[in-house]
Amino acid sequence: MIEFSYEALPMRVRFGAEAAQAVGDEIRHLGLSRVLMLSTPFQAELARNLSRQLGGLSAGVFSEAEMHVPVEVAAKARAAAGELGADACVAVGGGSTIGLGKAIALEYGLPIIAVPTTFAGSEMTPIWGITEGGEKKTGRDRRVLPTSVVYDPELTRTLPTGMCVVSGFNAIAHAVEGLYAPDRSPIISLMAAEGVRALSRSLPAIVAEPGAVAPRADALRGSWLCGAVLGATTMSLHHKLCHVLGGRLNLPHAETHTVVLPHVLAFNQPVAGDARRSLEEALGVDDPARELQRLARELGAPGSLAELGMRETDVAAVVEQVLAQPYANPRPVDAAAASAIVRNAFSGAEV
Ligand code: NAD
Image (cartoon, rainbow, N blue to C red; front, top):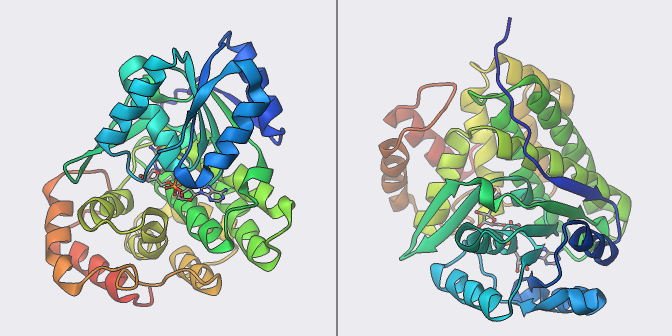
């Protein structure tokens, strides 16, 4: 008999709808009347367009979201929300923009309507992160869980294929670690396996036909499932390692996940029987770690941390930081094992 406990997170999900229409519906459904649109500078035009279409329901646009939510940007966005009398935020973009909405929610409790345009999955989680003095603090808080999520696959059309691939692998990493999480449950394992199936099928289709919406919709549906897995379970060595590599060396988030995942999975899969079987079935292979590395390479993703800017002299400090804090992992991790994983990811060794 397996024992588990499972708590469903309260949120509304609209998939496939035209974003402006669906966001307007959500604002009215939630009884809101003045939303602040959030975006990065790169996606400011998209945010302004949505704002125009919302008419009087939009209080304005704050388009200064940045990777890893610097504390100064969070303070500026909170001030803008206060000055404009916003009663909610609409975060249009990837994990960085949704992260900014979460930083506002953490302090002011403003509800978030998330409109994701990457596959990172932050919209499905109560996890926040804020960076101060080069150090990223993260935590879980129900206040930052978006109230509504609007998935419009059309908005992912502008995401270049290379970014689709690494963002998709970022999502797959949530599912892989959810499958061997200490707090996994049958429903979460089903979502994880289906998320991996959808993404491993759709990413090659996106690369083959970048202008087609159907494979992007398939990937976005997979990323929703993988994000829900991230929100419901405790992540292990892979996420810990990527957090350290991103925070300490400022390596790019999704690319780092893509490179590291096969190495951590190759280490964990011999002891994680159920997870391995689910992944074998989802991927249609008998070595999931090797298959994920093969797929990433075939789709042109970076293959080593060296390519992302890491230096060999960084290995020891990364290993030390990873071992300094305890985290869940199905297989015990000692210094020799952590060092081998980081070295192999650094050089892009075959798994
Ligand atoms: P991102 O949000 O940093 O976006 C990267 C760039 O791509 C930005 O300039 C953005 O404007 C642009 N972009 C996004 N969507 C686009 C589109 N459709 N077309 C064209 N350009 C587009 O990237 P990300 O990988 O989504 O997010 C990474 C961040 O999210 C990291 O800081 C990570 O820690 C965080 N994250 C948090 C969680 C969580 O649960 N809290 C989960 C996953 C990721």
